[in-house]
Length: 340
Image (cartoon, rainbow, N blue to C red; front, side, top):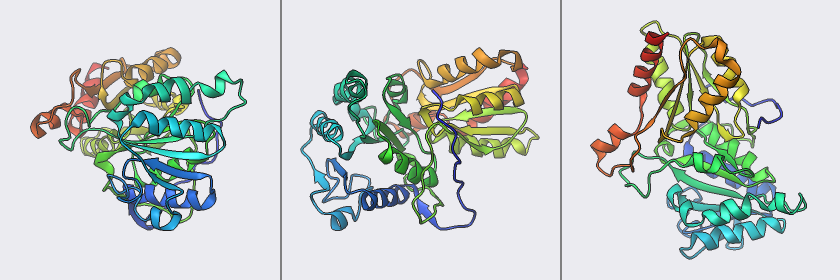
């Protein structure tokens, strides 16, 4: 599904810098000032400010009625969020690590995602579930997964994957204003990354990809933190005379396949990279959609780069070898050019 086209704001050059996590925090403050029906619920979100300090200062400004600490029960937390959203409030539910969605998947998939459909559109569920995803911090197999394929496969859910501080703020504003359940996938490795972020509130429409770099030899479609790695790989390859176009979908549900296909028709070669396991990942879906409508424009099969079919290792050396990086993207781009 493709969103209606709106003008996408662009980040200013040389403006005010914020970290990724501070940009998210600013988005929360601004949407909570904008709408008193917005509240935050989760483990350690109030008194501690969130396990990753995403909610620092919000308890002081908005008080315990809108910043609510809970017991350790993800099913109960999401159930609370679904109920509150269905009655007209706009809850932001923090689930800490993405892996913990497995504990409350029934509430997410069978309740939040389906309620509007099952009540014939009479019930809205303006719920945001924020999760910290991705590997690279030595957090082990139960705290390091990228599970976007689970979620994007579920009709009724929207899934956002910001790759920059600018997108973290703009996509979160859009998520809170949306009348449908949204999973906001924040990448743990990006929390300290800095970028230009306007002070005023702004929204980035869902379903509109960002072209991070234009090129003509090969397109790299990169999800989440892999967009950062892809941009670095493109810079390296430019020194070798290889021109790489980098597309960041920003959201994978809805997916802006139109921008991806237009780039594929231009470069004739596509590499899709994500941090999730390659098997059953969104790389296969994106490759299939490109092939369905742009097969005659391809000089080589669409290439997928992802993680091996194994749990994320705890050992830093093994974890670094497990997670795709700019070196893997550089190698993939070279291979696809050799094949064509």
